[in-house]
Amino acid sequence: MDFKVGLQVYSVRDFAEKDLRGTLEKIKEMGYDGVEFAGLYGNEAGQVKNMVQDIGLIPVSAHVPLEEMLSNPDKVIGDYAEIGCRYIAIPYLVEERRPGREGFERTIRDIGMVAEVAKKFDIQLLYHNHDFEFVRVNGEYGLDIIYKSISEELLKTEIDTCWVNVAGEDPADYIRKYSGRAPVVHLKDFVMKGKEKPKQLYELIGIESEKQDEADEAFGFRPVGYGVQDFSAIIKASEEAGAEWLIVEQDRPALGKTSLECAAMSREYLKKLGI
Image (cartoon, rainbow, N blue to C red):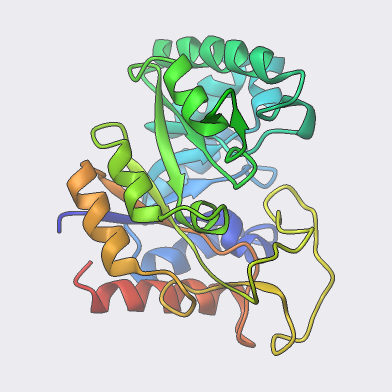
C-alpha cells in the first residue's frame, strides 16, 4: 500500500497555538509525511512555507471555511498556494448553507466559483463531510448532490470516515463510491454509546461539548485504531479508490493522553498495518 500519511494540525492545536514550528517538528519525528492545516496560528504564508521546507513535511492541504475563501478568493487561496498545498478542503457548512436548507443551492454555486479560482493556482478543491450532509433532498443524500452538481475536475472528495459511520453508512463503501475522485481520505476513530447521536459532535468549528468522564461519555474521539472503525477495510477501500493521502484527525484528545501523544498513537497503529 503506497500511501503517504498526514496529520490534520487541528488535532494538536493546543501545542500549535503556542509553537507551530516545534509542533511540526514533533509531527515529523512521529513519522508523518505531511500535514493538513486548519489556520496558520498567526504566521504568514511565507513563514509556514519555510517551516515545512526546513522540517521536511509536505504541506498536503488545508481546511479553509467557505466564507473565508469567498471574502477574498485570490488572497486566501493564493496564500495556501504559496505554502505549497496541493489541496484545499471546505471543512464545514454553517447551518443555513446545509443540504435541505434555503441556502443550499447558493452553497453549490459558491463552491463551484471557489473551485474555479483554486484551479488558477493549481490547487484542487475538496469537500470534507460531516454527518449533516446525509439528509435526503429529493431522494438523494445532500453530499451526493454536491458531488453530482460540481464536476469531478473542479471538486474531489475528502471522505471523513468517522462522520460517514456516524451517519449510518459504511465508510469503506462510501470511499469506493467515489473511486478515482478520492485523493485524500480522513482517518478518524471514535466510540459512541447506542445509536442516538449526541447533540454536540462538532469540535472542528469550536463547539466544545460538555466535558464528560470517558467511562460515561455518549460520544468520544479516539486515536486511530482505538475506537470502533474497521481501518483494514477503510484502507483497502482507499487503495482501491486511488487515494494518495491518509490524513489522521482527532478533534479532542482522549484516554488521558495529550493531543501529541494521541497523534503518535495513531501513527504507530498505522505503522503496524504496514503504512
